[in-house]
Length: 258
Image 1 (cartoon, rainbow, N blue to C red):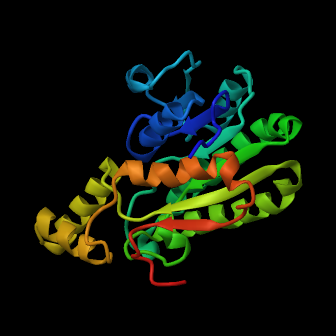
Image 2 (image 1 turned 180 degrees about the horizontal axis):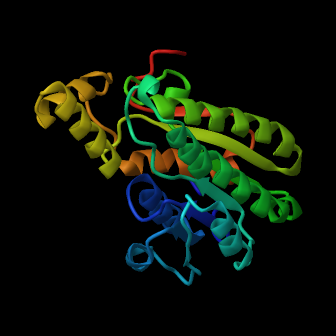
């Protein structure tokens, strides 16, 4: 299937590892010009060197999502001509919601919702001129089914999903779609952190915690980042033109709601 991504410009956030990196590589394989965005310049350079390149124009931008004003300045210094935006950043620290400090909510709200909003407000004007835009937010299955021990994350992810649906309603007439991909347990550094925290709290071994988490899915395994990237890249394509404002779980069937 030709996804018709050649000559499309894509901005991929959180693209130095995990799902973001896998998405950037797959977009480049499909012919898109990819700009990486993350806070670590050395890691950005390393990933940039890995991107497939057939006379494409790949680049990177350095920005820290804990500093929204810095992000805005970085964006305004670029050409802003992006057809595709993949909003993706690391999840908040785990723990029961009752024990969460107010600052944890504020930090997560800034990194996830505020920065997503800045990105869309800055990039959507060009998308409107093209009558084409794809905004994909990588969030979590907690949008459909809150996850135990991830209180702050559950709260902020839900806010991002509502923001996204509202944005989809407003931008749809301009040929811009806004969708959410909801990864299940995916083989990334973030998952290892979650498993380790659970092992420390329960006294179980890391292997046992991993086994329990795998068995929660009908697939009985973790996803690979490339499997999440497949869904993201399809939603970024012309083939997904009439898919808008939805949450797509990519979790091997773990989520129990319809």
